[in-house]
Image (tube, rainbow, N blue to C red; front, side, top):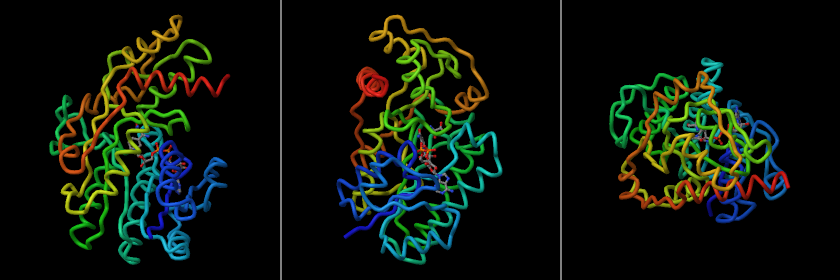
Amino acid sequence: MEKILVIGCAGQIGSELTLELRKIYGDSNVVATDIKPADKEITEGGPFEILDVLDTHRLFGTVSRNKITQIYHLAAILSGNAEKKPIASWHINMESLLNVMELSRELNLSKVFWPSSIAVFGPTTPRENTPQFTVMEPNTVYGISKLAGERWLEYYFHRYGIDGRSIRYPGLISHKTEAGGGTTDYAVEIFYDAIREKKYECFLSEDTYLPMQFMDDAIKATINLMEAPADKIQVRSSYNVAGISFSPKEMAEEIKKQIPDFNISYNPDFRQAIADSWPKSIDDTVAQQEWGLTNSFDLKKMVEVMLREVGKKFS
Ligand code: NAD
Ligand code: SER
């Protein structure tokens, strides 16, 4: 019987992934933790603890006491916020991963999931259909921490046999929990402003193409990756996942089909330079071939679901 620890359960991904893991493994077998309180659905639906992943002693105690066998480590400072506090963000993103990997080694855990990001790529990477293996020279603190994290994951696999698995998520779009301070956040914020105010000022320019993915597809990919037989997982750093690529202008046009008087304006800020250093589109054929990655939401379907679900919050 697997017993799972989720670190960062209150965030954009954790708030949905925790519930999905509880459906699969049973409520009492998924221990949810975060440094801050989470939704009632999580705190009352199964075990929940306040935990700072940097507190090695407590982390060790939580894992031992609950007889944890797998960890999903989701706590991190995202790209936009990390640029505001580079050293503190490096510390959180790196120390937390090393804590989790050392613990996994000492307690012989069966698997670890840790997400990487399209931020591992940089301005010298080919930006169209970015390959799995290519030039990686990120120029953001978030991207540097994710690239270093990928190297550590691969190191722990080869040196200690730790079965760490990872996806380079594109920007994730969801309606349950708002986005946590990244460069792709516009693609979530836009729905709240479209519904409340029928207008949105975008912090990226109209023609900024980025890879994005709807949360349902991201969760499905994560679980498929974690459940795949170990011999299928040839990439021990992190897998490219493409999702769908579009620009703010294209997303606004799709929203206008349902809210005809919606207006978008553009006022790019410091996140424009981050977006300009990231891929426009991703090649994820390696993940498709090795563990059967699929994507089912296109832009139209995603916009329909987002408008409907975010709309319910204000009706
Ligand atoms: P988020 O910011 O929404 O959630 C992160 C959670 O971690 C928060 O609830 C926060 O309270 C918690 N946390 C922060 N510091 C902590 C600490 N010291 N101890 C315990 N918990 C702590 O982020 P997210 O969007 O859910 O992202 C989760 C992971 O996925 C991150 O590693 C992120 O880099 C990665 N990722 C996210 C996206 C995306 O678009 N959301 C894309 C690529 C990669
Ligand atoms: N959505 C994330 C960010 O913008 C990508 O890792 O930071």
